[in-house]
Amino acid sequence: MLAKMVYKNMDKKNVLLYSFSIILSVALEMVFGTAFMVNDKYGLNEKTGSMNWLCTMFFLAAGVMSIFFILYSTAYYVRTKNKDYSLLLMLGSSRKFIFKFFSVEFLFSYAFSLVLGILAGGLFSALLLFILDLFQYLVAVSVPDVVQVIKLVIKVNLMLFLLEYPLVLLYFCKRNLSEMRLREMKKEGRHNRTCFLVIGGIVLITASMRLLRRSELPYRFISMGICLAGVYMVMSYGGSLVLMLLKLFKNFYYKHMVTLNEFYYQFKRNCRLLFIMLVLSFAVLYFTGGSVISQMPEDVDSPIYPYGFVGVIQDGGMRDMAREMMGRDGIEIPAVKGYLCNGTAVFCISDRDYSRLTAQELRLEDTEAVWINESTMLDIEKPEFICLSEEKVFTVTKGQNEIVFGTEKPDSLWQFAVLPEAALADYQDEAYSIFAKNGSLQKEFEQYGYCFQENGTDIFWRCAFLKDADENMAYVKIISIFAGVFCIFSFFGIFALKLQGDMPLLNQKYRILHHIGMSEKSIYKTMSSEYRKLIVILVALSLLLSDVYMAAEMTGTDTAFEDFICKYIPFQIIFVCFNVMYFCWIKKMVFKKNTEIIMSE
Image (cartoon, rainbow, N blue to C red; front, side, top):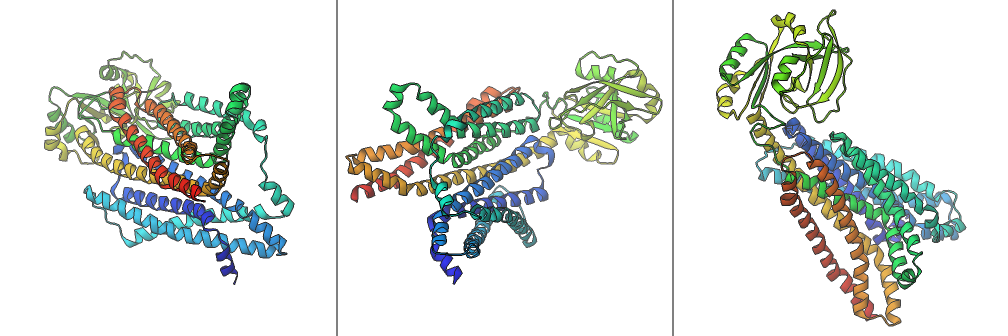
């Protein structure tokens, strides 16, 4: 009986936004889990460099926004229950019955949406696997793999439900009719007290731009998070400040007072939802756009990969084979193993060989050492000491990020030390040899590549590495494009749901305006203009943010300007065209029909 009563009482339009948020989040989690399951089996590993980070951060950003969307829609859904709560109190229902009533409704909505989300996520995951199969990524997914992803999704959403459910009950706890009435009233003038919080948002944006100067990838993502937080504060409170400033220009303000206040309250009322849409747009432009225009470097000597072959070899037979392959064009330098204070082994080369490799003069004192970091993913952490033995301890006086052998290649040379040449003389018997040779070495790889597979060698062939990386880059692009399309349609869906929620108020407002003489053309034009402004603001902000971070990403590359003009701007134009076509469709299918309905009444 209670379940039947709850079902009949449910407002399908209000439930739709809440259900869509859960379905969107669950579907994204399913796609996220499927993509990483495929990644674990077939591996992006390190060959794609920062692209693996970008793909992961894309999903995380979209996932966090989907959770915020759930929290927003839950708050909206609960606010729509104020009238039901007040009515039940007026009818004399006990709080226990009211809590039971809302618990059944909330649980039913959540469970139904979770099932639909899993089904939608399964369809999207199947589509993703089909697309990968079209590009000859033969992915075999077993039933246990699917069950594992579904279990993970259910666990995550169960935790989210257990977080939301007490908050819903607390919302109605110990509230009487007068308190519910007060919560429904508009708090005019509140913006006058909070508008100056926009200064905090500007401070956060400024701090994020300063942090963006750091070249390390983790700092870039931290900067992105701080910047988005600042943008949210500016969006939330900036309109209030602008409105207060416009009031100083009385002639302009009084002339456009109705339009300005109408737009301000509409923007303020939907600020959180608009911010979610902004982040989705930014994610598409930055992450999907970045993956589409990115490409692996060619097999030529470059600052990031200066050698076609780098090998660390100790075995005598392997050394002879490497010398045979090197010929007269190769470089061979000795290296010994040193140890940090925590026992970690690192390779050490002499200052003379370092000068030979880099064409930079370096002369170290007897107990002095320099620490070199070739990783772009890790910030430099300079150790204090390096030991060759208990007697020979060297103090690290300087640490620097520099590419000597190759970006994070070979694995054993991500970080190494430079010691005085005399310090290595006593360790030649146990020394390794580091071989390096310039140029494209595809023929040498085909002839000698299979020979350097034994233990005690760490070999980097640039031609083989870039070939594998290019294949894995294609995988990342497929995932990013798929996720980008998913985010675009989520953006469109959220905007459509917002329109559906606004339609009753719009109809009421323009029906009154029609009765006092507003023409059909003016109603259609004004209604379209209200939402066109919101779309323009969202698209403009997302373009601005993506341009800033993409410019920071491209800084220092040889083809930065060419890539930005010839690749990234066309991608942005395509994105803008999608939004324009969508809004034109909304104008024709929603605003025009809604105007006709108003005129016919």
